[in-house]
Amino acid sequence: MNFNVKACKIVGTGVALAAALAVTGCSSTGGAPRENSENELAGGVDTERIVVSMISHGAPGDTYWDLVRKGAEDAAKKDNIELRYSSDPQAPNQANLVQSAIDSGVDGIAVTMPNASAIGPVAKKAADAGIPTVGLNAGMDSYQKYGMTAFFGQEEKVAGTKAGERLKKDGAKHTLCVIHEQGNKSQEDRCAGLQDGQGGKVELLYVNGQDLTAAQSTLNAKLEQDKSIDWVMALQAPVAMRAVDAIADSGAKAKVATFDTNAELVDAIASGDVAWAVDQQPYMQGYMAVDALWLAHRNGSTVGGGRPVYTGPSFVDSTNVDVISESAKAGLR
Image: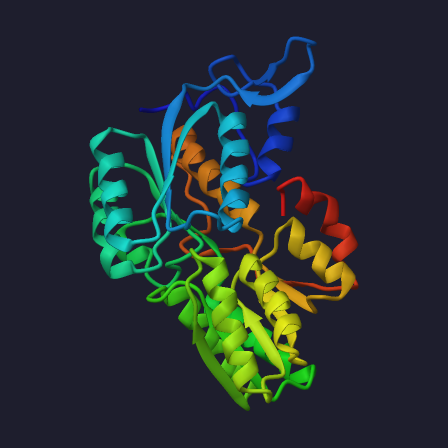
């Protein structure tokens, strides 16, 4: 399915695309902004409707994926796309979801690859079938191998190393790195980077991210057993909040930092319950992945020039949390 590419020239990608569309005069078939019932620009485009599937490894209850999905939905609304979002934390099931998207004849696929060897081959089937396919969040080191044209996310070991360097500066001696999805290479890379950046003692603790009550019990037991733990590094916001509770319950003196944010986590940073978070901007990952697929159909564009598009890492702490607080509570950060 191809769009009419003669009507106008669009400049910019990602979030900047909306602004470019708003000021560019285009024909009705070339991407002109639509008007709403009050004759105000709605931010959408009059291009042919396409169907895009986004398949993630998000587990039920993981608020991170709500932010990714919100970004994807906002881009889809602007781009006149029917978005079909699905997820499964089990790699074989996620691979089956990708195959189902191929079988249903979608016009584009955005997919995460926490286990590239399990999910990559079916993603390559999509690319080989001529379906524009991009990666996001997990699988940065192997997306090109499987024919994907773009990737949006952060380099996890680099992010982990930066987090470790910050922990070292904060005086960390014994850090508990909490992995909530066993077998997820991205999480393992974060903890490996943490060790590289911090030095000292970094200990792995595996918890069940799909059962936060059980995760907190595991944290309680570990913190009661080993009082030398001075930092808990969570890899998602909900586990970080359970770590805060576990520290209170166990009487431990450890501090909490985490990867990723949500509205509750932002409040915890503001209150001092969580020291800081590594932010990879999940809303942006979802938004840009869908927008890139629209561009692929619109004019054959690829994003990133053969390199990943980095959405992180950056740090959120007491010095800047107020800047993103409202956006976080609106599901935009």
